Image (cartoon, rainbow over all chains, first blue to last red; front, side, top):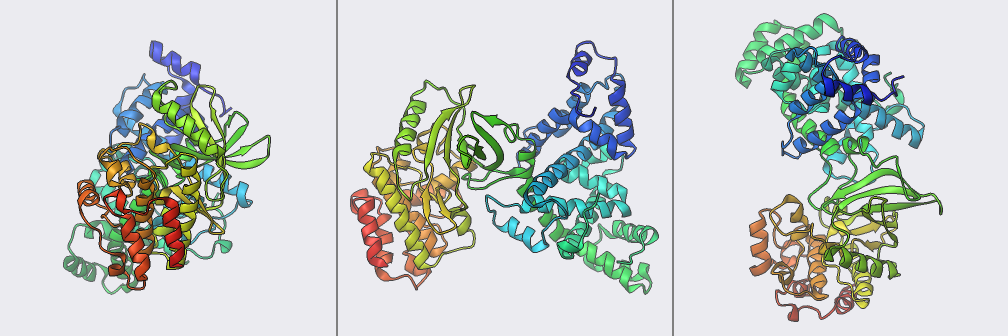
Length: 221
Length: 354
């Protein structure tokens, strides 16, 4: 049922405002509460918006922030038919959910591609490989997928320690949100976001560097 | 790892946050006082604090690698984000199944695909949208067809020139295993033997094209593909004629700019000796690891190409033989009359250097 496209409902929502799609609202609510199944169900509904977000994020990494991620997501939010509650906080929370969804789509995609190539399993990459990837890129490399999966692995462990820091990473790294945007999305002060982001990066960097051999690790569900 | 999660982590996090804005001396004093002899705790927090800078660099590059995609001359390759959301990947165009994005540049995207009729891998290059009836488009099609007719070991095979149902042109090319010369040059200079071999093979491929009346116009490391068995395949003939390729100050144009001849730069009518020049620049870079006319400011590069004499390669690496040095310098003569008269003449001179 997650595959159903919500196009007719969305169009209706744009044309005559509310009523809100109760299914989406329920999913958003559950996702906000940390229900990852709800995020998975939201992904097909969010897909077009995520694609647009991906485009804007590319621009951001190029150093050219011609598109505004926040504006984009607000628009997505409106399209997702939650107009009835124009509370900024709902919109901000929606952004955090979208960033989580973004991470999930990327990871699922990398995992599927990898499964096709070598039967799936744990990321088969070391810190050195990622460093090499960053130094020089081979057009046919699989390291990007591996790097993503390894990062995801470590991020799960970070979430065990600090769910908030993990969400900051989702917003900043996977969603491409700025510090003020992340602060709004997670309802945490900008100063805390800044420090969380710094500490999360330092911790993940350490973790990635001390990864044991890939064969000893199990994929995180 | 036996790291106790809850309390310990809270402690680390708390100290990290409080120490974050202090300078390094203050951090030392602060942690000394707060950790009260718990050395592992102190080490962990100060390790994290010290790790922030390198970690930010790491995530900055990783983010750029995963999400930005594209490169100054399109030599770079896949990127997770784009591919994940790429509307083309996973679809079928004509009888080609598109499986992944190989690279993206100023001239459109290149995808890996499967020819479902002949059951072989292919590379599909989609060109930028431009009017099908326009003069550049027609000229490009003409030249693509001429290139497709070339049958030379050192020219990338073009199987087909086609159009999507909505009229977007694309090239179907052979799929090779290997990497571009651009990617090889990231590690610095090559051995003299390799450099000579690649240059000579490039000359052979270009000579075949010149024989058919095709000038490449955009010879650069990103357009020289090196297969796993060290065979050079020259890519992208005639693409430099597309209107999308401009010499204005975009980042993208920079890669092209570095290898372009003075006459091409000034908009004169070019002849095959423009490719002689570009091979000279590429060879220079293969031998020395440096670009003869610099690589930074666009204005500086333009000025250097038009006016400055490059340093002889031997000044940068004294293992380069004198005669090879002389050949490279002759290809970089501003006045094309003073360069080797043709790509075949250059090839013959390079063979003498072996």
